[in-house]
Amino acid sequence: MARSTFVAVIVFGSALFAQEPGATILVEVRAGSQAVAGAAVVANGITASTGASGSATVKVPLGKIEISVGKHGFLPLSTSVVADEAREYRISVELHKAEAENQEVTVYATRTDKRLQDQPTRVEVLSREEIEEKMLMTPGDIVMMLNEMGGMRVQTTSPSLGAASVRIQGMRGRYTRFLADGLPLFGQQGGGLGLLQIPPMDLGQVEVIKGVSSALYGAGAMGGVVNLIARRPTEEPIHDVLFNRSTLGGTDATLFLGSRLSPRWSASLLGGGHSQSLNDRDDDGWADLARYTRGIVRPRVYWDGGSGRTGFFTAGVTYENREGGTMPGEVLAATNSPYEEALETRRYDAGGNVQSLIGNRYVVTARAAASTQKHRHQFGEIRERDQHRMLFGEIAVRGTSGRQTWVVGTAVDDDRYQPRDVPRFAYRYTTPGVFVQDDVDIAPWLSISASGRVDFHNQFGTFFSPRVSALLRWAGLTSRVSAGQGFFAPTPLTEETEAAGLSRLTIPVPLVAERGSSASVDLTKSVGPGSYTVTLFGSRVKHPIDVDRGARYELTNLSEPTEKRRRRDAGDMAQVAVRGHCFVHLRSLPRV
Image (cartoon, rainbow, N blue to C red; front, side, top):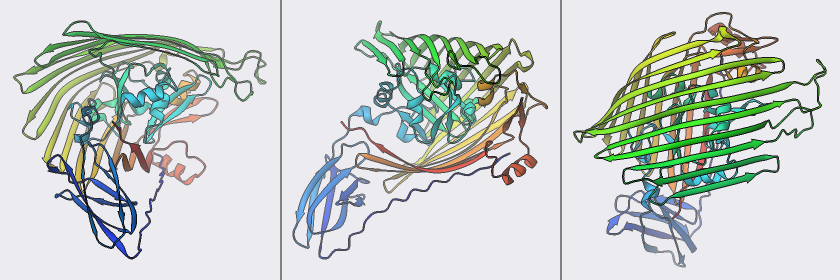
């Protein structure tokens, strides 16, 4: 087990005025007839917060005083006053509620369907406006959109083919589970090239849970969860068409249609065609941008039966041919021949869910998904063909009692990998499990979420995965504390083997499951139109998979003696299993 710690410290300083004489500014903040507590008042850079009476006092030097008042859920307000005498100046301001769409953001990835601001588990959410901004820059995939979220990094895993994986808080990309409307339509191996095959045109919201989330979604979520929520058809028909052509030879054409078919039925359709020409930017004879052609079709059907009964169904087809390696006419000095890397992908998936309200107290949800993905890899003269199949089913019951919202359910994953040319790496993992979650609003300033899951893996045994989160509010600050444990069932499919293939891989001894744990603490303060968040997090992986790269690739679990040896070797930091970090996230709140 290897260890490494990364710490970034950001210190904010503020100038303190000590001029004499000065004036006292008393700001009274109201919304209609109600006093507004916890509003941030900024007078010439000096900040104060309103108390229960809705008033705040700030002492400032004489002169013109610029005053701004802000609170989450209200439109920001600015005013000014000229203080020419050393006395008290009383100012009354009235805040107005922001539009409801800026206040009500429902999160689905935590299963309780609660508002974002009421979730004890920290969930990062990208709205449609932010998605559209990134879509105009990279309409063919979601890489840039995820790469610009705090605590996330998109890492290139296969330079010649352009594959990438998403690392959440430093954890390897294979630990991240990707969902589409809560369904694992991309299989267990959702990262890698799959990221480059998901256009953002039909996305309405993106939800990210950081840290070990096996208590929520099982083995594939040891690093976190990314839930891609589709746009729902509206009363007005949607006809969106986007065409993009880049200077580097990339072309994207996407179409999204959405409409209501009847009072109870609606549907949407995503279609896309994408291509890229082979490109060598640094003239070294190797392709920096792979050549590809890709086609995607995904229809969705929605049903609203009234009385809490809803349904959703989707299916998707993805065809892609991707080529990289040496440029035409270039040869390798060692072999005096070109080196071709290529990948053909054929993916078919389908899934859906139904939800029903029973007795006005319980919500029963059933989900199911199936996907099959065929690959044909080419690594020089080596050809590797494989098929990856995934079946998923889940039934859950949600109820509310007083201040509690609980969820109980059972799920099963069946993950099958069949490599035709290297059959020794075939596997089939069947993992039934049961889970429970309980969210409790203990007080207006404290909410707690506790969840646990037991998985019965057919190859690696039984695993218990707990997670506890707490939401605290005080003095205009919001803090979330979270800790959890989980596991990951090892496979021969890693970031390294995706780039080099399985023909060169050996596994000298049977692998054991990786066990992970993580904890995080964050503190958020909203001041006017800005939201400032400081986050501390750490994660630890026991028995992490190590890939020893040589003439052949060797896959093993790191052990304690190996950890100590590697820790002494300052030059070998490739395998990181313990991570920590501190970052400050600055984000502007939406304006109306």
